[in-house]
Figure (cartoon, rainbow, N blue to C red):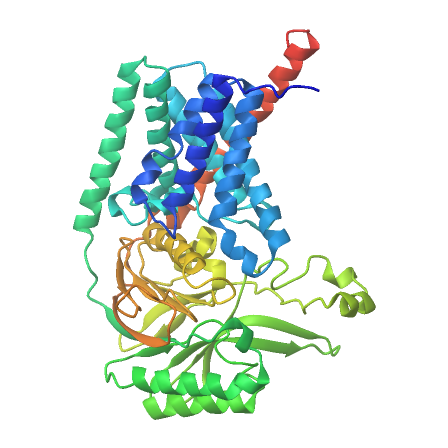
Length: 516
C-alpha cells in the first residue's frame, strides 16, 4: 500500500500564504468591510510568489483568486450556482499574470512594486473590458471608505487607485522576504505618503457648489419573486403611491426618483401604470424619474424590448427617456439568441432578450436647471459609461437599480461601494435609487452624505430618502479622467500583455534550447 507523502515545509507555507491573501481580499469588501486589509491582503501572495517554484506559485495564486471570488460573489447563488462557479473560475485567471510578474522580477524594490502594480492594473482593466466586462470589486473600490486613498481616481480612474494599493502590498512583501534595497523601499513608501497626503488635502479643499437640488428617492422594497406577479400589482402601485405621497410632503422637493423597473409593466403602453404616474406627478407638481420596461414595435411587426428610464414632467408628459446601454449576459439577453430556433427557445424556456440602448441621455430638472444622466442597474460599475455621460454635459449621475435578485446586504453594499468611484472620477454627485437598497447620495469626494436605513444598519426596507444635492455648474472644468478616459488602464493593459508575451516567448526559447 502506497504511503501518503507529507507536504514539505515550503509547500505548506505557500498554501497558507495563498489562503491568507484569499481571506483578506474577501474581508476587504462587504460584508466584513475591513478597509485596512487592502494594504496587506496581497503581501502574503506576493511573498509566496518570491520563494515558491513558479508552477506552485501560479497554482496557489489561481486558487487564492478562486477562493476569494467564491466567497465574495456567493450572493450570485441566489440566481445561478453554475454561473457563480464559472464566473469565479474565470475571474481568478486574471491573478495568474500578477503572480508570474512577482515571481520573475530580478531588480530592486521600487521596480518590483511598480511592475507588479502595472500588471495588476492592466489585467484588472482587461477584466472590466473583455466580453463586455465584469469590473466588479476592483481593488480600488475596497478602499473607498478611506477618502484620501481614492482621490487619484480623478486622473487614472479606479485602476490607478488599485495600483496604489498593490504598490504598498508589493513593498511590504519585498521588505519581509527580500530584506534588501531599503533605499528602494523608502522611496516607494515616500511616494505613497505623498499620494495619500495629496488625497487628504484634495478632500479638504473640494469646494461645495452653490447650485443645489432637493431630491426624494423612493425605495419600494418589492421582493423579486413578487415584481412580475399579476396578483401583486396592486401592492406595487399602493407602495409607490404611499411612498411618493410621503416624499411630496417636502415642499422643496424638485424631483422624485423611483428605482429600476419600479412599475410592473410597460408604462408607455399601460393605462394603469401611466394613470399611477400621472396622478402622482400632477398632484404633487413634481417630476418623476422612474425605471420601466419599454416596447417598440417595428414596421415588420417585430417587438424590441428595452430596460429604460423615463422622466415625466409635472404635467405627466414624457420629458425624457433613456435605454440601458450595457446589458447583463444571460440576465437581460441571450448571446446569439437570434440564431436559436423558436421551438428551442420555448423548450429551454429562454427569456426574451432586451435590446441595448445606443447613447447616453442628459435630462434637466429643478429650479436651477440641473443636468443629470441616469445609469441603470450595474451600469454604475462601468467607468466609461459614467464618463461618457459627464462628457455629454451631465453634472449629476442617478443610478436606478434593483438588487433584489440577490441577497439583502452583501451584493447591494458591494454594488454601492463600486459606484463611489464614479463620483470621484468625474467629480460629480451620484444618487442611487434602489428597490431594496442601498439608496444613498454620494458626494464628488466619494463621501456617502446620506443613506436610507432603519437606524440599525438595515437598508432593504421600504422608505423615502430626502437628499439635498450640491451640483457643480455646467462650466466646471472636467477632470483629467473625464477628458481623457482610461489612458492609464489601457497603458497598463498594453504593457502587461507585451510583458506576458515576451516572458512566455523567452521561456519557450529556453526550453527549445534544453535549458528547462
